[in-house]
Image (cartoon, rainbow, N blue to C red):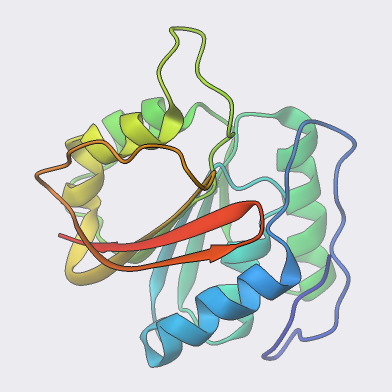
Length: 182
């Protein structure tokens, strides 16, 4: 696991020994190739941040800021170490993603929102993808021309989501990446 390109390109990232499923380098490269110039000066929100790899990659490629939301204590500590290792600063929120989204300031808008949730279902039996797509607060946090990048398990049914339009969907082995806009 490493930063692929930009000012921190090649720096290895710490991966905690916990239930974190980091985005593979080739998937990360494809995501950022698709985002292109949108990353420059972007304000980024990294939900289910894990190692912080997506937000850190964005910072390395010229994003202005990044907020990392991760509930797992070991993963949040790894994000902190990875930010120090790459000499970037970012805000780490160690809390449940849905609690963060519920209490986020509506005037704070993001250019790019990344979400790489667990593939398994929640304790209530719902899928994270469905919960994210139906959540009314997430579209309110995205700039009008912003992009919501959602990783999910291929074949997982896509819930009807009136708030979102899928602009691109790509499969990379055991991961499918959706690019959504409001």
